Length: 227
Image 1 (cartoon, rainbow, N blue to C red):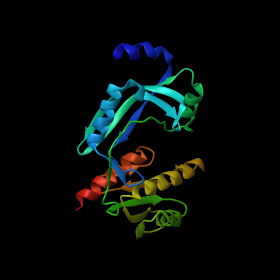
Image 2 (cartoon, one colour):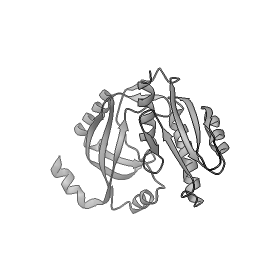
Image 3 (cartoon, one colour):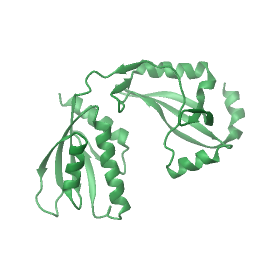
């Protein structure tokens, strides 16, 4: 198998790395079990054709090949990590990835999904922010289905602290909404003057230094420990 991959390497314009799948709850409230990820990996080992990656689920648009993969675990969390070569014949896909226009790709194996029965379980965290209009954050969180309480607002020179309660199902969209708002603030050139931090009982997270997935996972873990 390794010889086969080595022969293919001349076909690649470059490589990307990341998680193909994890045990995090997705936007539909579904969760892949660690056993499903193991099955995922075994199927790709047994059938190399499953390693081909496609553009937007279009099997006529192959853009790369999974050259290496392995399971990573952190406590109860697990993820299938992979290194993917992008074909030299698809410089368009490579350019879209470099520009950020393309943030994912498709491939397929058969897995069993475990429906998370506690989709309405509460997740609690706080948002500490110094922004031009703190009502923008409050309104955004409310629109995304969260219960929001402004717990501190001393003066314009001090940050506003929002106590946030949402559900496991709504949490990813809530954090992504905050991330999108922060990107708009940065685009306006005001990131030096303003900032947004997300705090759990264990950590302070930064929208520049932590991914949406990392923040969601930390809030889920922190909420579990509060029980």
